Image (cartoon, rainbow, N blue to C red):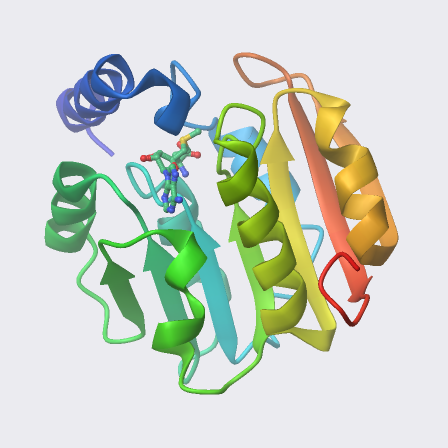
Length: 195
Ligand SMILES: C[S@@+](CC[C@H](N)C(=O)[O-])C[C@H]1O[C@@H](n2cnc3c(N)ncnc32)[C@H](O)[C@@H]1O
């Protein structure tokens, strides 16, 4: 990746952040180290269907496409139309569908399939409580019983909500991110979506 391209992406991200700070919830895109650290916590190579919530500048999307098989389906959701268009123009891959819609509506695009892996870098702590709960409940419902819900956060505050909805939650800290990132891998979704 060229330095100029990288800079242009960061500028686009900063612009989105200034326009909608609570929706974007970070000053920088996630570092490569944190992206890899989070994706290492699940089996992307064996996944048929992967959902990504909060595509941003596509830092996870590109790495997800590197890891999934030839027949996988990757569905990415991003509410910011400008960010969504920029990633669409950059990542031309038949396995990828980018949707300019909220993660809350992900079920509409899945056609009844379950997701093997869901990757989220949504800023759950600054999103409205209703949206946060709806997306966490939905993730529980859409995930295959043997699947993984991968979550990056900038604080451990979400842990209780994750443990309420999933039987197993693994945690790691990635200090090589600005700010340091908390990585969660949630498995064994409880039926009833956070019941
Ligand atoms: C912290 S940024 C992460 C961006 C990128 N994945 C990264 O790690 O650099 C969160 C992103 O989620 C998007 N977002 C916020 N609420 C959303 C929602 N309900 N559905 C889909 N995307 C959302 C924001 O526009 C922003 O691009």
